[in-house]
Length: 463
Ligand code: UD1
Image 1 (cartoon, rainbow, N blue to C red):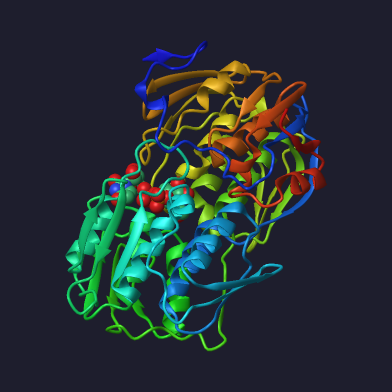
Image 2: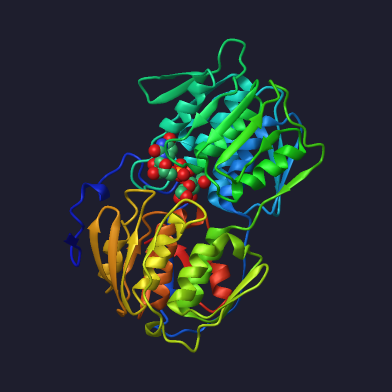
């Protein structure tokens, strides 16, 4: 066991990574958030509306490669990751027009089967483009995909799946991969068992299989709700996918025949991580906060933990109301959680949940089973006054309640970045969260939305 009340933890996990999470070069100055802490008072009040899911939007953009006509995507969040994915598609030949929350993708006559290195190497979801590009063009060249630094994020499952479908992979000295379909340029359907459950590998191989020859069976597939949402749209447009959302998915390929949208539009499902983040905020600092336009049935693991903790929740068909203003946080009980693939507790919410555990009464652990570098935030919460012990790279112990005090912090990744905003909201004094860009990657217009429910938060150029 290693206690981290001062200094950085001594595990090698948190050190330099080749995939550091830094702002993209957008030609803009770095920005930061300044947050006035509520000092433990629970005053936030009003409604927060949930946007379309980031992790659905990025995959829908990738799927547009399977189409021969224009694809329209609705309820698209205005976040940096969507912009970056759009830029990669543009650099491969697509025309992309955005009007409010609708994105239209007009495919080129012939895609350039190469993912723009400078962008694809910075965003993990770029790997999803490889499946449809390989299926459509018979070839794809791409760099190792970057993204949030959450420990090692290999791509072996993708390459294994492509190999099972008859493709071969070469890696050059600069770390670019080139994958080629078998002779004739069409992938062959295959039976693919994933030794590890992976969201993006499931999606990538599902998309590749749509245009393949013959049937593909994906076993031990991920069940995240964004997967059946995408499959349902593709099926309307000519794909034949059965079982998406369950652990075994069958795809009968079209043998190279592209899909046709013929004016159909895919509407992104609500972002369950966006919703979960605000529900946790509601428990921590809300007087009466309603999170609207969400799918509570996608949030079972979080809602169950919160109700066991004693957080007053009202759950409707498409909203969750947290009316916790009259209950001081120390009245809530600390409940241990362990992250798990859907429908288990999402790894993307554990940093935010950790902030709640700093305020509730008792001892609880967080067991992270998906990634091995996802406690980088613990050190900073300790600096703010939290009592956290890193027991091993996968487990932390939090003792609450502890009063948090103002600090200047740097968002280490998207979700931990928002966790810092939550910690700053409950703390005493004015805190700063640097590296706003990583939060903008996945949360739309965060300062305006939180400002409307009463949090004093502003964006400013970094000093
Ligand atoms: C997706 C989500 C991310 C979320 C994560 C887990 C997107 C764009 N991102 O990320 O927000 O945190 O699911 O819910 O949808 N793995 C391998 N080999 C591979 C691929 C993955 O070993 O080839 C491992 C990973 O290291 C990890 C586990 O599989 O330990 C799950 O990762 P995965 O589901 O692939 O996460 P992402 O799809 O990258």
